[in-house]
Image (cartoon, rainbow, N blue to C red; front, side, top):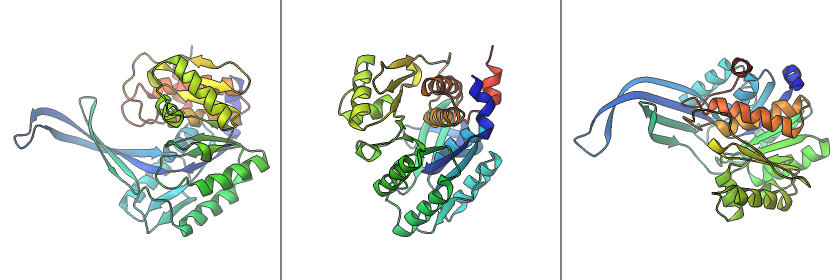
Length: 318
């Protein structure tokens, strides 16, 4: 993997839905007398970055430079998110602070290595016209300074059809590689991107089919590749690895590189971050997919959202 030596020179623009991932850690020893639910004895509270912010953190952890564009609210959760980003060496200079929205927060309650519940605080509406223009202004200012563009769509309102139309057209005119982690059933808005990275369930939903065996995954992948005029498509499959599709070539399946699967939270963020960093450093898309597969195998062995680092990868070599 000679491209690893060049990752520190790579600059990636990450656009999308940023969020704060909060964890309440505790123990359970009894059931509530008020309702048939466990009582959690809270021991610790922690937080980290999620969504597009986690993509940027993964890119920074690999030694590349990530420019993060997104929207946060004017609230305490935004302050916590900005602190977490700064600790992970990700600049917060290009985040739009909106008085019209709250910062997206996912709170997970965990006891004995098991997630008991998740509480979401969010607004999914499309951004106001003012916020959309502020996001686009940051994007335009950064496009000429990066090699790769990543869109992290979590369906929270930042990645609108208008933004995607502008972005994909501009990237194609500038010759920029654009990788998109998609959301929802309507994939037509992603037409013309360099690569999409849906998981197997998202790909099936977009095709209106099931996804429970490899032949259906390959059928869905080839359909999306052709329908959306993509150069590449990577369908992630959790504990079953991932499959890379390339125009006019046979699909390549990569088995998972993990002995223990504890939590797939954030694995998709790791995959697209590794793809962006590796491709920006000169790797082929297959080399980049193998690199991303290896990194994803490490993060799914951790509980909670975990950003990959070169140190983590170095420890598993050999």
